[in-house]
Each structure stands twice: as C-alpha cells, then as structure tokens.
Image (cartoon, rainbow, N blue to C red):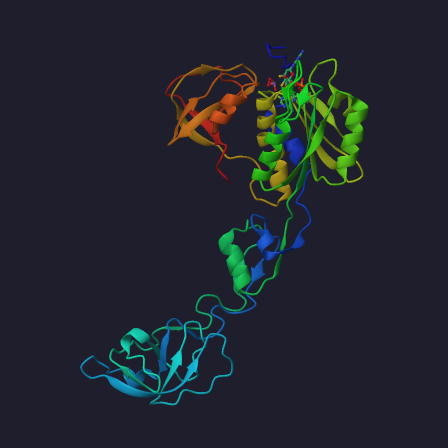
Length: 411
Ligand SMILES: Nc1nc2c(c(=O)[nH]1)N[C@H]1C(S)=C(S)[C@@H](COP(=O)(O)OP(=O)(O)OC[C@H]3O[C@@H](n4cnc5c(N)ncnc54)[C@H](O)[C@@H]3O)O[C@H]1N2
Ligand code: MOO
C-alpha cells in the first residue's frame, strides 16, 4: 500500500473506463420536436423533402421584368414599362409575365413565369401604373432559383450529428416538425452522509453544506443530460436502498456520492455490495481512488458510486460518468480529449497512480492550481484544466511538456 492506500490491485483508469463503456449503449431514438432537438444527437440521416429555395423567388422589392426589355436602361435613357400587377410573398398561381410589361414584386414572392430579372425599387421611379427604369440589371439578377441551395433528396444532416442552431434551422426549413434523436439521458444524483446540510439552512455542529449533488447535477446538465438531485440520505443502508429504488424509475444513470471508502459508516458500499453487478474497488488514480460501478434493477441501470471528497467526485464524473452519458447520447467521442501543454511550474506526483492536477490553462501553457488534496474545492473552481500525470511519473519540472484535459471546452 502507498500513502493514500492504493494497493497493487488497483484497477488502471483505462480498464475502469472500459468496464463502464461495456455496460452502456446509446439510448433508443425518439421523435423529438425539432427545437427540442437542440444539442441532441440525430439518430438517422435527414434528406431534403423540399428544395431550398422551394420556388424561384425575388431577392428584392422591385419589378419583375423580361431582362431583354430593360437591358439598355440608363439614367440618361430610362425605359418605360406598364405595371400590370403586384405579387406579395405568399402569392399563389401566377400568370405568365407578358413581354414589354413589369409586375411589382416583393422580397420572397414567387417570380412569375417568363420573368428573367428583378429590378430593385432603387433603380426606378417606383411608379404604380407605369415604371421608369433607369439602370439595367444583369440577366437573372435578384432571382433566387429553386434548389440553388438544397435539392430535393440532398443529405442535409447525417446521423450522429449533434444538432446546433444552424442544423435546427435547416431541418425546419425543409419542413421537419420532428426529428429522430437520442433523448437526454436522465441522471439522478444521490448524495449520502449524515454530516450534510442543505444550502440555505444554518449549519449544525459537525455539519457541512451539501455541494456534491449540485456540482454533479450541474456537470451532468452541462454534458447535455437531464439531471435531478434526489435529497441526500444519512448513513443508513436501508434508507439509501429505499431512496435508490424510488429513483431507478426515472433514471438512465444513477450517481451516488460518498460512502465508498473504508469507514465504519460507508453506506453505499454496505447497501450495494452484492447487488446487481456492482463492483467496488480502488482505481489507480488520485484523486478518486475509491470507486464503484455496476448495473442494478430490472432495467440494469448503471450506478456510479463516486467518492465523497468534492474534487474526487468531480474528477470521477469527468472521467467515468461523462463517457457513459456521451455514449448514451450517441456521441462519437466518449472520453475527454487531451492536448499537449507546457507546464510553467513544477510539482511532484505519487508513483503508481494517474494524477489529475488542477490547472489553469491558456494558450498552450498550464500552471498547477493549489495542492493535490481532494477537498480543495476552491482550487478546483479556480481551474479550467486537469494536468494528467502518468502513473510512472513522480516529478514534473517547470518547462516540461504535459498532457491536459480542458474542462470547459466541448468536444
Ligand atoms: N482508512 C481510509 N480512509 C480513507 C481512504 C482509505 O483508503 N482508507 N480513502 C480516502 C479517500 S482517497 C477518499 S476520496 C475518501 C472517500 O470517502 P467516501 O467516498 O466514503 O466519502 P465520505 O467519507 O462520505 O466523504 C469524504 C469527504 O467528502 C465530504 N463529502 C461527502 N459528501 C459530500 C457532499 N455531498 N458534499 C460535500 N462534501 C461531501 C465528507 O464530508 C468528507 O469530508 O475516503 C478517504 N478515507
Ligand atoms: O483519492 Mo481520494 O479520491 O482523496 O481523493
């Protein structure tokens, strides 16, 4: 055993991730109203049911004309045309534009058959019965052609795409009221500990404010899940199991915090050992050594039992719960990517464990923030990156190249 108690049997971080990913799969797709599909992963290719533009239409308020009629228009030799009508956006069933005439047309209105240019108002005297055109447009000017943007049948958005505002707009533009997408995973957070007091209430002796469920629920929401905080439970295994059972019906994932170490009142361990496929053990990392994971209940719901120290809980979420959420979302990449940075200050790291050092990253430089302690929530909040120190590295010097994971960057 080392100083922090991780014995030789500790599971490597990557093996624990693999154990988790083997137990989760993308959630079944559902038909989602197109706006509600923001940030969701599209489950099937969407092809265009209509063309964009859907019909030839005007790009300007002006006059639809036969281009040949106005090709010679100049300010010193304007051309007169009779105005034979007006077309508004939304107008239907247009008759042919007779050569030698003009029709008033509004932006977005369908161009009448025969028209080969639209002259903007600014190049005319804006006449109502008769118009004086004093500048010649190019042939085809200001006509937006049917299908010039999107043709019927074009592949618009591929399955697996995370839908953003631009894709939502495009899908609506081709008439999709609903799309087939992976729903938000429902994540229930359940904190344990008799010392916990809800924020907003006065602290009693020996009590601390309950913060992990807020942090973990926020992290789950930031990852695109729907997260619910179940009220925290004391260190009583029966009460814990009852609360967990209640929550399983509304959970795709359950995350617990606390009660998984070596203490006399480690409620989560006591309640879940032997239940479903739940495994408890050490993972070769710091913070976040004591872990548990398995599936429980009729729906084999994945349960993550995270350690209670706040930094450990957060890190465990980022490393283990986040990939499960992303897999359920159908996202291509499950785990946070790493990038190379230069470390501006040296520090030491325990042998045999992957160390996750809180850091402040900017422009490929990273500085460690605070110490290694897993209770240092202030330092965690002040950081925006994790410096990943491999198991066989015990010292990082100023100027060394290191791997970092950026905490506030989507991937
Ligand atoms: N004898 C040993 N003791 C400990 C070991 C060990 O190997 N041998 N491991 C240590 C490590 S590492 C960690 S991490 C913690 C994990 O303990 P638990 O998961 O059982 O968590 P608790 O004991 O319930 O709490 C730990 C710490 O975190 C605070 N906490 C818990 N829940 C919350 C919450 N919802 N909001 C804010 N803070 C919370 C709690 O008050 C404790 O201070 O075990 C070490 N011990
Ligand atoms: O390894 Mo514990 O999870 O202090 O941090």
